[in-house]
Image (cartoon, rainbow, N blue to C red):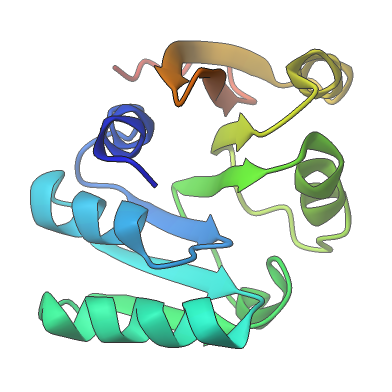
Length: 162
């Protein structure tokens, strides 16, 4: 993941919040948030063994293992016990996968999400509207001749954040 994209995704995050990053890969987003945006703490999941091991190594390398927990598993399932987090972060996955992860969760404990799909952003926007969320903020960046739409969505229009 390139630095410009990580910074753009993290710029959507409100300082002092907590997060759950789904599909963390190498944990670049959690590391940036914990080191530079002063997140309180974070949680992350990764479905593939190799990237999961890399995430653990990277978090330990940056001495963040006391503020970050990473689990191997699919979607939100490994952290179904969490009572709440401020942000659910799902980036770098396809729209259908993002929607499946959210809808297959039995505990919808997030009011705010940062989403970035690798395809079909129109479908994602329609899902947001259909499910009574709204787009609070968005960023468009170009990476490797591809445009990425990063959306911060919220289910409470009265929330005043960034």
